[in-house]
Length: 546
Image 1 (cartoon, one colour):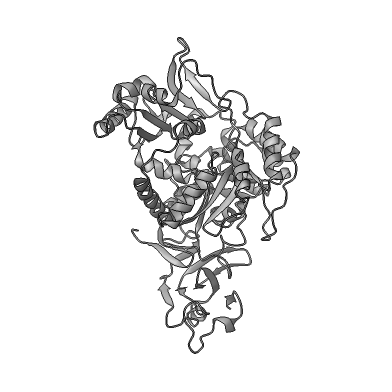
Image 2 (cartoon, rainbow, N blue to C red):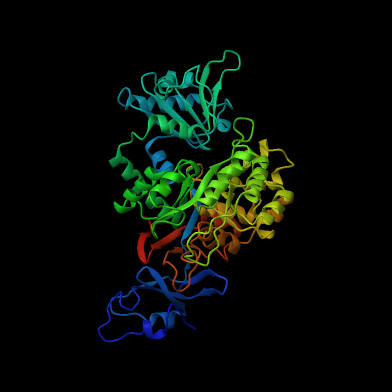
């Protein structure tokens, strides 16, 4: 039985027809097609016409639709799924991290190691030029502490140095960098952040919390644009190599300038993945002045939710509930649903209250049947009573089971035992009927979806530890559910669920051919699955080794 985006007559060969006038431009046969469409779960073949899916069905029926110019790919029995949607990441930060020093635990295990890699970079960097590093983890250092400006001064006294923590929520500057930013002993803490000081002397340590936006305002963007495009292109190939065809950039400081950067990167061809860019909540007026609101753009670049940061970095919730509710109100009145960053239990509670108390969302132009949902991002510490409140609120949760895979062993050592069963509780959220999607938060962790899917199914860390054993079954979900969270649900999260995320007629032809059948493989092998071919808008954009 054939499933068509139109009648069989529209796809049947006829005299003089060419590609783009009715015949499929691409056909994939002999596949195990996982449609992620509940109306029909599987098929053997897919026909693509232009940039959209035209039909799916048996290999025999679909192959009969081919014309002389149709490209036919024999999938050899491999599994075909929709392209992955990373619902929460930081695209430009990922590209920037490729330019800097890799300070992650796989490279650096102590403050001394950190000094060594910074010193080595300084030896090959012109005096006075910035040195950037990314991904350090204080908990993985032998010293179990953050580096300080004095550590960095020893390594590179003649260069401004900036190192970003793997979480993205802390930064260390050396003395020269502090001077260039204009931070000294008399500088007060900004409302949204903390300037760390030595408890005994009051001296600046160089450590800053939640101050990425503060630094950006004072330093601007001084990157080499040609080199940066090359790094974006490298990132693009990495994402496509993972089968990721759509990303949602969750930058809280995204403004019109960032929108224009994405336009340039896509028009140049450096970035092929589809991008939904969140709008920083403080930038909504500039978007509106430019005639842009939620959903503006096209299939390649789309304006998404208003991003709001809700943190406990200062020791108290920032913003407080009243201010948070005002931010949600303002976004809703401007036609933007919100995406609230909330990790801790107190933050999640406040986010739910704000979403419940705020003015309803001003309905955008009805362009689809997909409901426009407010979102809570991360939802890391979420006991059962909060899960129930989230379900009642009607909002969506976008979370990161990949954190439990990559960081779970640290959680087992450092998180209170009573909270461990409730960390990134994908099973409880799904069972409560909460709309749920997955993202990576890259570059905090690698954007590869499969370790996250493996964790969602097994609740195991990268070393095989369960988190925790007695609750692993309760929080685990099926492979089919986990795949949906990274495809169809990801599209719903940004309001494009009627356009992509499933394999059915009329949907964008964003597809991934896998080397292993995810539905029959042993759970322990899920994290090893790889993409063989990635198709974006009907075009093969990545194959084999890239």
